[in-house]
Length: 163
Image (tube, rainbow, N blue to C red):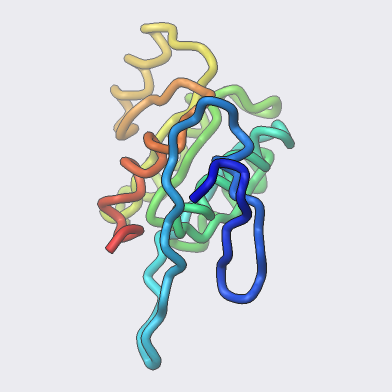
């Protein structure tokens, strides 16, 4: 497919986000087909991020990989949303209303009984102390922002995004 072309999904034509990111290698995922009577098992993701542009980009990238995405922009919103079950929680460590490590500890405590829920920290700062602290509390991994689509694919793949 040409780099600047539109991608057809169902009957709507959408501009592929990957096509708009210069130098970002990507593939066009096939539209998901749900067999009649079968539940869609697209992975569910809670994205906890306060920056609107980062929210937009990460949400579109996740959706292009077949994920269902819900967003929270504060610790309070995120904790309220934990009543829902998610396959993956992506947490920006730099939220304005709480230290990200504290929120990660709270989330990790709440999801311990849900072994299928994975918690991954997103950060713009790769300080060894932050990474060590996150891994010590049970976070699966710490990923440097900006995250690329291939890293998101790696996170989602074990969750059944690709067939």
